[in-house]
Image (cartoon, rainbow, N blue to C red; front, side, top):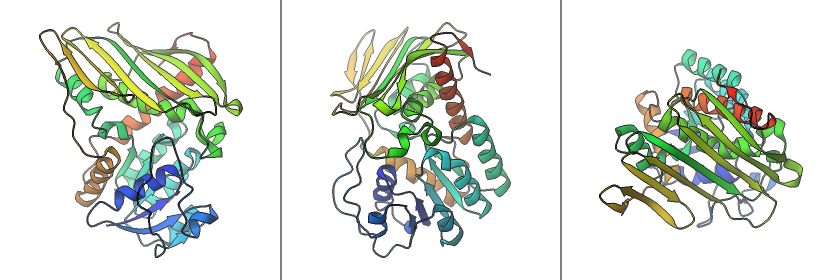
Length: 336
């Protein structure tokens, strides 16, 4: 299977390295507006995760400066879109109209309307559309998804998701809200998606926080309010353009047990009424696992059930509502 990667920054390189480990996949083309990348030099690409390791040789891969030209001219079966968020919808629609399957980085798009247009185009084209909501494939989050789904936690009474990092230095477009949707939107879309995967759509949201993208500060404490009485808290954001380390974590408490994880040195742990233990994890890389799943969906023509485009669109809808609610300083906003 031949895949073109549109956008070769931090996440594009992360995906490229994952594709190189999957048998039967060939990189058909790459697009980038970075002259160093077009010259084959990837040494300067960085992000909030370690993507070091062996150098990647792309000298023989066809390269395009313009992503849409790449879509029109590449000899590929699918495209992997790692462009600024504002380009997700138009690039996805263009690729689907040309008969290509699409894996698009999170957030799926800037708003629900764009997401719905992408979904409609995928149905019309009869092609696979999937958003790379990678937490659904991360080993540390799989035990939570299973526990929330099989009822072993009992009725959930408390849930907190937290994610924070320094303001990014690897992509100027992230500080432009018209391109990224904002730092909180781009970063915490992971945790919104995970909350929806575990607990479904809330009835309302509320939020407080502060946004100053130019200063590298974008913070929120958001709440998802459910009819059952459960309130899920999602909190974090950008902590200045500094050396503040990236971390992510969750705590979920039910009538039968609690489950907790932090990337800052606390592996997933189960705290039951009768016993507690560290949860053994799968060793698979989450990025490779999500891409392998996407490739398998393309090869079989099966719609992605583990990460549906409809669920990714719902995450965008709720994340945008949290941004709206933050401006209302804690006033609840109904999930329309």
